[in-house]
Length: 432
Image (cartoon, rainbow, N blue to C red; front, top):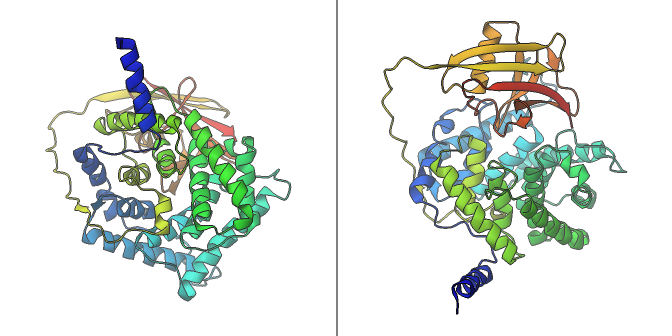
């Protein structure tokens, strides 16, 4: 057999073997360092910083935070139950703590299930009812003829269905039907500006429904939608190996690693994604706690769907805090970043000087302190989200897009992105 024939034979054998999605044997030291980045976030216990996704990610990984985990879950329970179950017409005048969104409530229910708890009793039933009301409101916003849109997003819609499913709580066929229609008529779903994440979350919800058989009348549509979601995510793979982009890849892999529809294309795509992930871990790409908590289950061959029957007995390695690096006694180097805001009158362009390594949020704060620039944010589980720039608030189905000039949307949030010297950052109000 010639060299070319031998190569084709080997590739053919590899393709025959790689029919399922496996992300195994990732460098354990890199995985441990990834988990260590969550530990400081577990000390942030204020209501606006508590993040159920952190708890879920650790429980579905090979890592644990010891007593800190139990304390974190206790803090989640106190905060979420107090804020969600207090009367909306409270007369104590203390409404400073906003009620969690539909997505936050759904993640809280996932956290309970990650601790092998089923919601139940009077308080639990009220939480379930609240999430079902959220979904019914979203269904009404989408409308009978599917011409409307969720008030939040199809991502949160799918997450809400998934959270109820892992607790074996059935939602009406009409609620599931709206998500099915969005996948079957792709432009509806792609109006969410993070379509790979949205597709993946919809697929995880469908996977749970298929395994639990909670909506038997929709079973055939669910199966077809799952196949369509997998195909779309595979087609979204970049030459580097990511699905959509590096930050949407963890959730996409959660879906693909749990796929019961093996193909050679699936296996080879996941081999390519594993190599890309390994490189990203080596370069410390993942810093956002939400993305890290979505990736840790993947590195343990787990997904949110495993919360149908979680494993709370297998030992997990105890995470120790990362050793502190001694501070360098150097005068900080400064960089200049041009900040531009389009779509406002008068237009705004200004150069901002900040220490090297500053986040984009630091740039915005500096511009606000030393000029007419003004901005406001809203706390989310992914970090601060821009809601207003120069007094202009994002309206319904609008958002402030952050771009690396001239037209490259940033993949990271303003708290995570570190601009480079001489870079121009544009803030642009867009509709979706």
